[in-house]
Image (cartoon, rainbow, N blue to C red; front, side, top):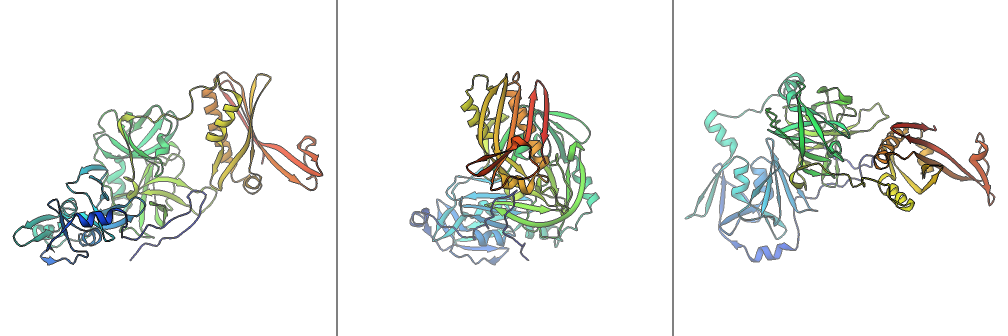
Length: 499
């Protein structure tokens, strides 16, 4: 059975691209082939000859074999990401990433040195046999005289010691919660509240947007214990993933990270997080679908989540972590929620030398800024209102000083406002709150008025408008009125929306 994959466009996700076929092509092919010695190497798996095409090769005393047959023979799921020429494989909660030509692989988020890197030969990606087999729990013996490699799989080792292995039975929701509840935490920063998952003695996995622009933060364990956050150790803004180091050990067992290779539409899942600050709230549901945005896999599920659930855990029916809850589509009764798949946790991480908070790229102060500089900043950092209905672009930014006030004005896409004014009202209010809060930080003693206008041209004057909201210009009626009027006065905010 294969999971169903659909193409779609959503306001939340970009146009989706399917993952590339499991072959690799590149400029390294010819060079790798010419420098690699072909040899009569026969590979046996659990005493049965393993068919490998292309044939194994020996390079720098390392046996290299084609990636697809060896991973599949050892029971691992596999994906080839053509864009980055990277193999991603997973089995029993272990995730392996090998990039062609790289001297290091990534195993469960940790870098591991490779004696010989993966190469391309005649369009096939060749990976180091001993490394792959060992990481997947197999034993490898090389008979130098005969040129034979004997692999004993982890399953065969288990059967030899304990008898035939049986797949674990699916756990009940209460079993999953009992096993994992204390491994999910609540995160509070000076900017946001979210959730997180314990993956090491002092390491928490969460969403990047939970930690974005924060200067400090605290982790709250299930029993109320508060532990300060030392900073972020690695992150990827594109996948919305961040690894957070705590200032002291958590003294908790980490979750078991699973894969989605054996996860299908209709499978049961359990979500644990802190929606609206209600710590370690549990909800149950199903996998609704699988979506891909370039090489990022998203799980669509219908277990209820809300603001504050970001960074929370999504567990499969075996109690393995298969996703980090990330977002939802609001304004619908269909319960359309998304999690970043465990396959994408380790993708292209930006590693930091020391745990630290990622500073905002906004300036500390605008006190000395010219009006045109403020206009450029507003367009660059606050020029889009994101909502469940789509992204509304703001244009025609203008800054002025009027009677001691700094007045900032922009125009909202009139089509977006006409269609989504009511359903996006809460998103527009949140945008205004966030924007004014940042402006207050940069201009603490400055009264600020933020106006976002609806502006459109009509052949006839629309009815019901105030006298100053429509004017005749060149035979056309120019309509303009503020749909967001947000003001910051001292430490107080006033926001008025026009529906």
